[in-house]
Length: 286
Image 1 (cartoon, rainbow, N blue to C red):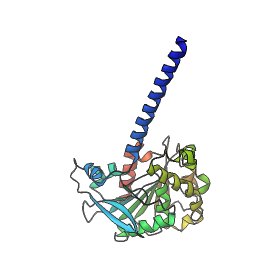
Image 2: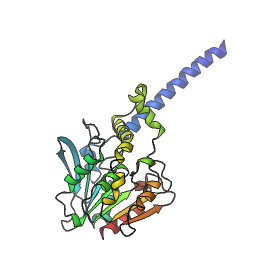
Image 3: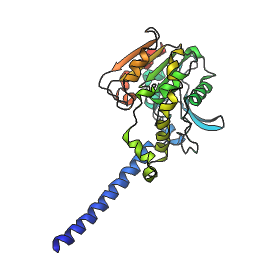
Image 4: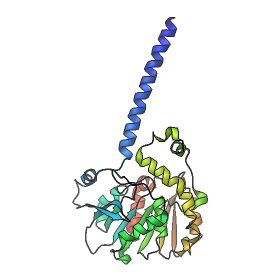
């Protein structure tokens, strides 16, 4: 009898602790992965001498947000395109880096569906994203513009055949046969668990699930891009396998595409390999 009462009390306490820990983890996960407000983004630059500007625009009647830093009008411009999941702050440490802002101006933007308090759905279209990127770069001098795409952003940049100074693809997801569908996507596909997923991750899941099909409209024509291209990819990438980069390299003459294999690096190389990526971006400006 005593053991039964003790077990029920123990089970009640255990379940309560479990729910509290789950709620705490979920709250932290929701907070740290949700897009930041304009005020929070600008506060990231409080201890710098930079003068960032956040502006809001429309493309095909869909709103998006753009973060711009003009350090000197004679400098080249780096345009960052984030992946899935992502936002305009993904490259913020590069934009704040003194070695970089002495050499470039910056543009970074939230793709539709990833804006702060966004009421729009992701468009699930590389063609739409390419056209939106072209609208953002249209007033920039192309011979002084370096376009950088990370992950899903890599396919967007590669689809843009505008002649830029250079295109840089970081861990690009560019071939349908190499797409990995993480098991956690099941939580989005199962209606019983979809409600648990934070809104921004529902958008990312939706885009990820359609990406493989969408890539088939582009992957046979990647070599139509005549830009000088740099690809940097980690060989331990479980999200976007390194084979994306090796197959892409076979589609271009060696003088047009330079592939750098980062040993032991995973998909988060823009953060884990920060100093190396920074060096490659600086070299791309020369």
